[in-house]
Length: 465
Ligand code: NAD
Ligand code: UGA
Image 1: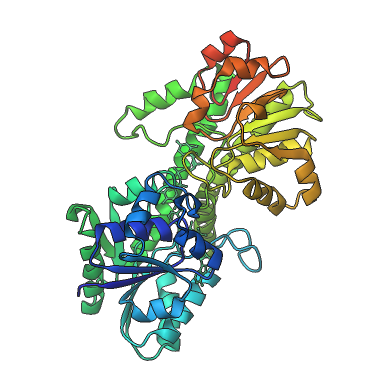
Image 2 (image 1 turned 180 degrees about the horizontal axis):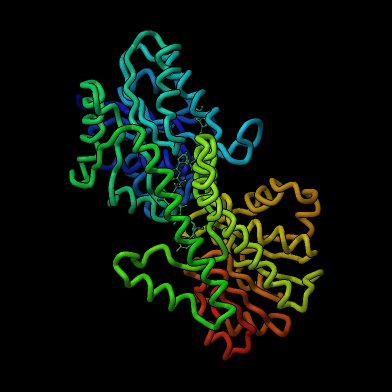
């Protein structure tokens, strides 16, 4: 079966870039990305490519090439479902904020709404692809809703989790380590659906990198992959604290262990803590699933990855307070970076939010500069915590779009995101305009501290004694 028409429900950080790349690599397939949020769809359709809702290197060029050719963004969800042979569900699956499993389980209400809408609209057989990250065995629930509320048509459900990382989304999509497709391998219809999706990726991904599995393995592999990646960051971050106490250097330790090919060099950068929309949510979900099967030791093991991450963020803000003579009240502290990593405008679960909140509790005056994050977003992140009134947040924290101005008269600078441009600043000029002693806290280990010390800065880097 050759797919000619695809619908993707959810035009977010995954749906947008993923479909743009499929459109680029498969000009023979018409793709419509739909969303309930009309502002998001308008932004994807904006003539000015600077206004696309997702910033990713090279994404605007791809959208520019494909949009209006074989890639469309629309709010007409029913029509797109009706016309498509294959429907990707790429909606958000945040941590539940209410009821049973609050603060741990994935909230599947958006997924269920999609399933009910597909069932209502579909008049021909369709292949439904889980692109969102979902708890293992969600396909079972989806199938039940589709079969029981549908019009008697056949649905095949595939799990095709996405492994792209933000900031490198286009590269990751064009050249993935692997594409994972889970389906009903025991039936002819199931295998036909799997083959239809394999054929799409085979347009640019070598066949040996396309892995097909049982649907449950695929669903669970996505949660497991994120848990393992986050575990590496928490592991090296836990060692960073020990380095600071013992005089060891975490970069040297990371290099030394990473050269063991069994360990490998990637994902060993000590930091102020991992952020992003998925690591925390997916591990909490894994912990919840383990607990719901009574596997308490398994749950505790993975929960520790989150606890170390919280500790790392708190440790960083505590270090700032203790270094600044145990008080930051009324002192200007400049944040370089607010995004959860470089090359993205995404701030979800960014360590900067927690660090800022801790320092605001100590009555610090914070000024923030981030090359891609808007002022509106920064205030929304803080307001969401409900730690203080919106007025207080705006009085205590300012946003500046000039990296030199934002550092003027600061008592301390804290690097929260590893944007490359921070390395190229005129640090002598920044030092001259700061309060003295001028402190710098590098939460990403990107600055040349030896050089900064020669200028006169008092320096702290995560993981260096
Ligand atoms: P997102 O919040 O950026 O986008 C989700 C979109 O779905 C939103 O625009 C929302 O309006 C829309 N939506 C919600 N319910 C809808 C409905 N019923 N009908 C139509 N549209 C609806 O989320 P995201 O970052 O793209 O993540 C989506 C999924 O992909 C999540 O499950 C996430 O865990 C997973 N994932 C994310 C990443 C990442 O890097 N962000 C990577 C891999 C996997
Ligand atoms: C992560 C995974 O890398 C993707 O494979 C996955 O698809 C995605 O989650 C998802 O499911 O959402 P992402 O969160 O976009 O991607 O970005 P990462 O590069 O993994 O970084 C996550 C966080 O860990 C960032 O805050 C980053 O700064 C931090 N990190 C990463 C470190 O502190 N040290 C490292 O060595 C690596």
